[in-house]
Length: 170
Image 1 (cartoon, one colour):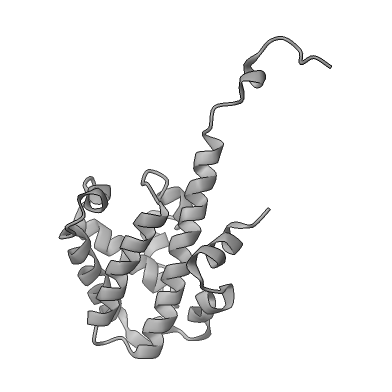
Image 2 (spheres, rainbow, N blue to C red):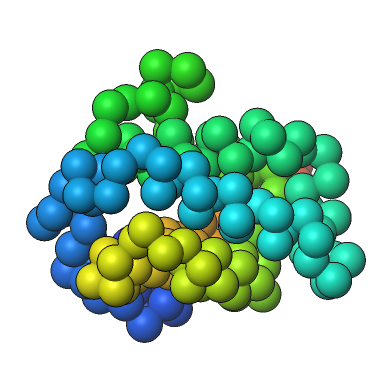
């Protein structure tokens, strides 16, 4: 059985080595806090203006300002900065925190579309950092898809034989 990381690599087309190349450079020190704030602000402006109603509806119960803060604090923490996210919200637990949302292949691709556009528009992030970050985002998006599928498998009703009080015929 494939691990969630293996599924993420298969589905994203990004190896674990490339996904976690963000750990070879302290991107927080290199880019600074404002770059992460700018990226997350641009990203969520795009998400909340998305013309795809099905995608935009995923975020309907989220406040944009809070989503921006959650994202940039997580990125800062994950990419070498202070543990802003954990200090405010606890362990990131990405799969658990995304549990209420439909994290499908289609949703991951749409999320990544907006993230690529936001990265392309963030002038204070250099090309090498953008590539490392996008590889991490792509792999992580499909890690969440794999986690969502696992969640959905665990919610399946038991087979009809499991509910039967009669012993199975031998």
